[in-house]
Structure formats: structure tokens, C-alpha cells
Length: 87
Image (cartoon, rainbow, N blue to C red; front, side, top):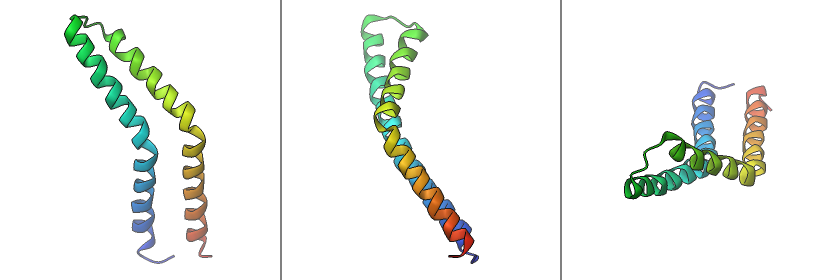
């Protein structure tokens, strides 16, 4: 294992994390913005009204993209372990 490998693995891990978390965070941002505008327009400021749509959006995105997310994370883990073993 070279001296640069931990830094490279950390950098690649953060890139994988950003690519996997991006769709979930993007959906939460869009839903949160829509809910915020609707709450401001109707003056309903109940925390449950803001939380429930965001929770459902997060569950929906993970349900739809869960296979792809697990594939990306498992691929990175396998590649990282192979590189750390020195093969």
C-alpha cells in the first residue's frame, strides 16, 4: 500500500457518496421548497405538514434508486478492498 492510497480512497469515497446522496438530497430540496411555498401561501406552519412530504420523498427515491445505490457502494467497497490488498 503506497502512501497516497488512503488519500485517493478517501477522495473516491467522497465522490461516490456525493453521487449516491445527490438524488436523495435533490428530491428533498425540491419537495422542501414546494412545501415551504405552500406553507407560506396557506399560512399553515405545522411541522408535520413539512416533515411528511419530505419523508415520503426520501423513501420514494431510496425505493426507486436503492439497487443502483447499493451497486455503487458495493462496487466501491470491492475495489477499495482489492486495492488495499495490493492486487
